[in-house]
Length: 314
Image 1 (cartoon, rainbow, N blue to C red):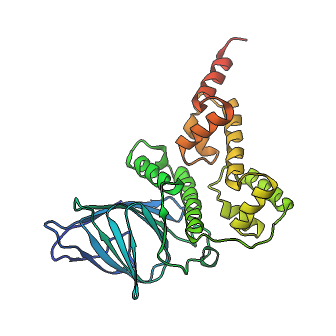
Image 2 (image 1 turned 135 degrees about the vertical axis):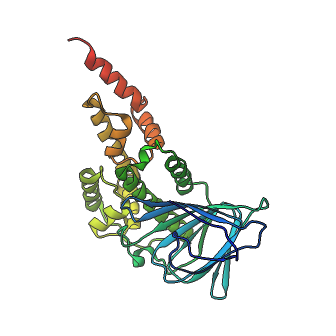
Image 3 (image 1 turned 30 degrees about the horizontal axis):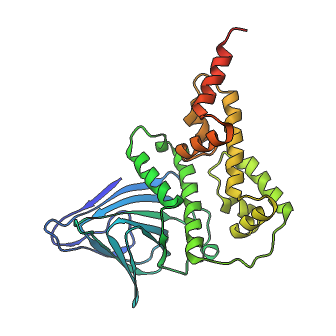
């Protein structure tokens, strides 16, 4: 979906990406314009948009979604009542539903460019209380980490008509991973210290059972924690204590084993992409690297080797 605005007078209508905005204005420029390109990842409760503009401001009221904004070029000024936060290039801002004014400012070349990630907490199975989104305008550290890398990957993939990520199942998996990375960024930005007690080895085993039963779904660690009735942070701490690695690593390990087993029984029409997506992987590049690290060869090499073996006369 593409939404473009560029007309005079500079007071313009609301873009589809922010239906709750009360007012939108383009900055003075020789030819002012703004462009939003993106849309909803199928049934995930997540929207991903790429925003480019000569500069614009909007007042948001009645918002129902949480958001993450990352200026790639230019900056943002966020105003909450009398308080203002500036978000420079490379820093993300995590926003709740509180009324605010957002003003994106172009870089020296006259263009603003950035990502907007929107999360519908109800459709994503999250609760406002557990996320602590009363804190609005939380600026993350300058980030070149997992969330930013995945946003760039998705933007490139979804721009390609041939990408497997146009499939609804792949988009649901991508949406689940984005929610998890978003929540990780939120926790990191707040620098929270948990004082929750150890949930124990028994619940870690229950978590592993949930993962084994649901690894092929767009499953998040928040989903697993919710099934167990504990917080995601408590689950993370318990895995570190009793297993020595994170719940995410445990889930990825199960998915890698499942993919390897699927290659062993793959039919002539099965592909690496189909098998990876069926096993719950949303990032094909990371799947290939993780598989190679685990099994000592690329997934395509495993599939080709097994098919060569199966085709030999007995």
